[in-house]
Image (tube, rainbow, N blue to C red; front, side):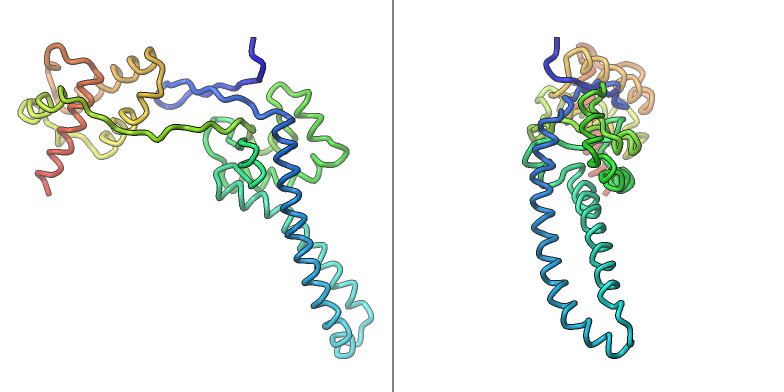
Length: 262
């Protein structure tokens, strides 16, 4: 039994990722912080706007000869307030990969339904629908009683809010056993047949393997090893070499062959 709701996504490498949904408490705390920051921004704007407006209204009224200049200034102020309100969330969620100052403090993040980072389109849709979600706490109702804890803006934008995970810095380590195997592969295999994209996939796996479950790691390594073997026209993998070690050797061989070609 899980205390928190969770969502699972499958990466292109067939690795299953699991996230914890943020929940109403974390999201409310983040929103309180964001609204305080927004309030400060809007107060500064309104004070500056009023100071400018009082100086311009009389001057423009004499030139234009209209008594409605004040209403125009009021309409512009309301419009700018709305743009600042929505633009605040769009700007930060796009720039900070799904986080605003409030979300960063609350340690939550917005992602797409497929587990990928949000973009400008998703952030804009969420922000435009936020006033509707805030009306009569409609968004809170959807979050509390929805299985995936989404507000209306999340359903329309195709997003979900999760607990932000603190990930350790990924390091790529190559074992000593891989070095002699890499030298052997340079003699027996056509390493130059590998494309930069092939090398990038191997490098990505070697970076991420430490965070994979043993079963998933073995499965991905075996699949990649088979694909690389076909690409470089290798008839047989050296004896007593695991798929993981083979990929390390391929990584070193490709680097060496690239250096030779420069």
